[in-house]
Amino acid sequence: MRVADARQTFLGLWLRQVLEGEMITIYGDGLQKRDLNFVDDVVDALLLAAVSPEAIGGIYNLGATDPITLLNLAQLLIRLNGSGAFRHVPFPPERKAIDIGDYYADYSKSRPLSAGSPVSPLSTA
Image (cartoon, rainbow, N blue to C red; front, top):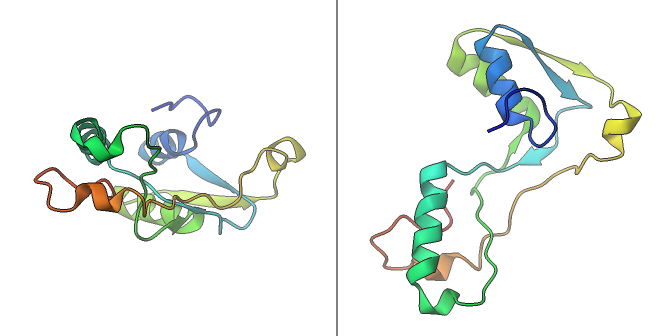
């Protein structure tokens, strides 16, 4: 996970900032929604798809049942760390132009593949 800057993701940067006592910057109101996946669940999903004949040629999303807002995510990271702070700033024009708004996956197509499997379901968070 990239932690030097937010070029390809913001989460690594936020984790570094909260651990180093730096301020997390939230652009806009922070109500943009995201869903997160635990890396072990992603690996399980890839392995399950690899051994599921019905997955051949399919395209599947992974996601979480309950998306989280960026504001709530920042608050959660700070709470789990035991300290930290965030600030809201207006979107700079160059960031606003590439902001994706809400992004959370529809992973309903993945659910049937995990039915009855001893491997973790494809649709875990």
